[in-house]
Image 1 (cartoon, rainbow, N blue to C red):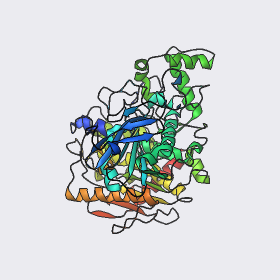
Image 2 (tube, rainbow, N blue to C red):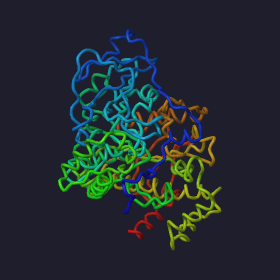
Image 3 (cartoon, rainbow, N blue to C red):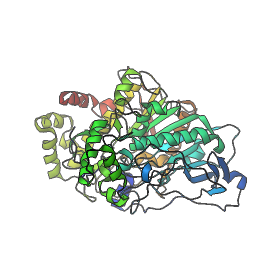
Length: 544
């Protein structure tokens, strides 16, 4: 599908949570890391890794180790190459503060980042010792493949209540992670290759932190969930993880025209490598790197400083398939069973796209009524009446709310469901919908947010220094969700003794089971009916 010229910066495929929080003034950015004296409990905070000794910190119920290199800095001649091994070090490396985030524009990080030396990870464990190795959860952050950092996610609650070793990582973003060019090996997959390097590091080092390298769950949200899905289809990830969790993202993620901003073309989250390389060639020309020799073009781009490339970062936020790392479009691999067969937990939030629509007009202004009317015609044309029959404007508090429902169903719910249908033919799948109507940081906002994109993250993490304020019922829901996720990471089944049962998703059933997760209410929900998925499947078939 046609996409904007990569040399022109465009609004990405999703607005991130921390960007939204900055818009509505709900939270200040800052580090959530607390450190203890380096001399306290030295036997627990100094760990031997395959690269050398690291000294972390002890804070109450958790041990934390930050800024551990899992690959060499991808700078100079290593820019746009597969990750190389990290150099070992002598002595004891300080691991009490996070590393720089990967290069990105301002958004989740105040001022952004200009660092390419960013391939580091963080390990959080319960402070108490355990007689048995703990399950490992390797978390891939979201941020639309253009922003974010592992240290923005404080997993202390997940580690302690879930009795797990939690690893959060950085991986290359934007054009540093997903650029494609003719003649450039690994085009469009550098960020995914970084993730595999981190997964291999976990295999070598999990035991040193009390984790079980034979029980690793790869998990992520949004871009992190898409990444997890891609790793299911990647031969290079075989044997590196044992379960997969995909929160609000799948390999079938696609969007209609105008979904996130006016004039946005319809597109898919994963693209053929030829498309990515064509974009890269056009960008190289814009940046003055022209030659009949592909190697000369690549070397010209490698010589450009980060600040020259940051303005066009967001032109490359869709990983490529048809590559060595991702040979086939994942949905094709899933349909034939040619993927890494592990148990899967997958789901989305009930009101995903309110987070996108709330800033549709720029700043903190949601989609106006006039814009809604115009966008409906621009997007659907002669099909507008059919769409309005399913989504009558009178059923919603505003045009913005109506558009959010359309975008939620067509973009998020549909793709998540289709991926689960395909996977469930070969592996156990458990699916959920997070349905808290008033999650943390949903107010104040210029429209009703509901269970917005990323709102489920508060159940597991403190984000960018912000701790959620829960009601008693929300706290019980958070505890139950951590119990579900931890049980899944331990056994491949989220069912917990004494908790509400969670049957498997059965794609052959008339109504495949999906677990609704809401304060005070956990039980079945008919996601396909609730989100009009039959309509969108028919619409997609007619548009193909």
